[in-house]
Length: 209
Length: 209
Image (cartoon, rainbow over all chains, first blue to last red; front, side, top):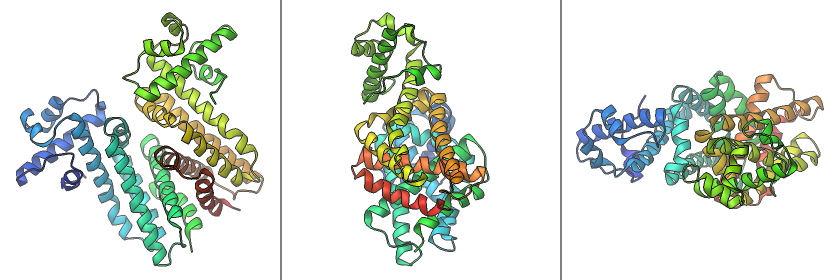
C-alpha cells in the first residue's frame, strides 16, 4: 500500500535527488520508516537515529537525501499527499458522472483513512513542523476538486459556477471529506460506502445542473 | 471580544474553581494571556513565567488555578470553544428558518476567524497537547449542529433524517465551516456573507424537505 515512486517528494524540493535506482529505493525505505516513527511518536519524540535504524540504513546515508528532520517531515507530507491521490485515482475514473466520481473518491478516501490512521497525525502536525507543506497539501487537494468541478460543468454534469463558487465549494467539499474521515474512519468506524453516499447526496443536490 | 465567564472552563474540569469573583477575574486574565502567548509562540515555546508576566499575576497564583501548562492549554481550548459558540449564538437565533440560521452562523464564524486567526493554531495544536480537549471541541460542535438539524426536521424546515444521516451531515457541515474559515478568513480574505451564502446553497438544496 506504500507509494513506490519518490517523484512527488523530489518535485516538491524537500529532498535531494538520488542518482541511482538503488538510491531511490533507499529514500523510499527512509520515508516508510519516517511514516511509522512520526506516526507513532510525533515529531519531537522522533529521532533521525531511530528512523535510520528502522529503515536499516546508515546514519550518514540519511544526509545524502535530507538536510534535517524537518526536511524529512516535509517530504513525508508530500509523500502522503501523493499516496492519498494515488489511492483515490482509480475511484475517480470509475464514476458514472462527475458527482458519482466524487462519491467514489470519498469512499476510497474513507477506506484509506481507516487503514492509515497515522496520515491524520502527520498532516495535522505538519501545520507546526512544515507549514509550507501543510498549506501546499490542502491547496493542491482543493485545486484538484475545483478543476474536476470545472470539467464537470463543461460536460454539463455540474451547474455553471463562478470562480469564487468553484473555490468555495472545492474547499467545502474537502473540509467535509477530511472531517468525515476523522470521525468515521479514524475515531469511529462506519461503512465507507454509506457515509460517502449520504454526504454525496448533498453535493449532488447543490451542484446538479 | 473576549469571553468573560470562566464557567465553560470549569465545567470541563481543566481548572480549579476560583472561590471569589476576584479569583474569577484573575483566571480570566491568565486565559487571555495564554491565548496571546500560545497563539504567537505555540505550546512548546511558551512558558508559564511568560504567561503570568503578560497577565500581570504572580507565578504562584498560576498554580492556584492550573496544575500545569498542559492543563492551561486544555482550559484555553474549552474557553475558545465557548467563545466561538457565544459569537455565533446571536446569528443562529436570527435565521428565517433552520438553514438560514446555519448560513448566518457560518458568516458570523468566518468574521470571528478573520479577527481571531490564532484560534486555528490553538485548536489545531490541541490535537497534540490536549487531545481530549481537541476531540471534545469537535464532538460538541458536531452535536450542536446535529441537534439543530433534528429540531429543523421537527419543524418541517429540514427533511427527515436517520440518526446516521444526521451525524454524517453534522460532521460534513462542520468540516465545511472549518476549512472555509481556514481558506477565506485565516489564509485569505473574502466576503464572509458571500462565502457563507455559496456554501449554504448546497446545504439547503440537500436538506430541504
